Image (cartoon, rainbow, N blue to C red; front, side, top):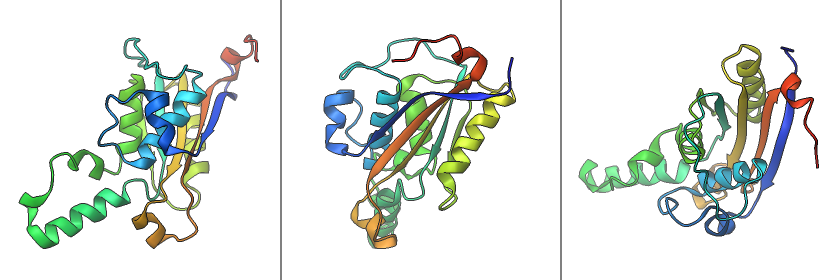
Length: 187
């Protein structure tokens, strides 16, 4: 098999308000805006119809590499403020899962039933390009047959306080070995 990697799907998503119509309402209640944007971008990149959630079994051949520098900043800042004012008992148990730096990659993997490697990059302005490089490396090394790479950022008050020029959005590319993609018809 060739070591070349091909982009077999892509999408950009900018409107977090569209998430319930595109993804369905179930499971979105406590998801952060960056996570919702990422789910929408992946949904589009996979070519799924609106309102349809994957019902297939776990796909151990598909990996997720996500990139976000401020994706869960609202939760982290909120938990920090609550602990400072009320102590640890004041923190809602619903906030805990979103406090993980891997929340975007983990949520995408769970939502779409991807059981391959799951990585989250939060390393500054090159994070998106590094995520694509990591995805290509997963394919070239044989660790995955398909990699969903998604980058997302929120534009909530906490993110804007850190980086005033930030704009909310997500972008996704689906990577596969070029040899596998060569025989497909593209629309």
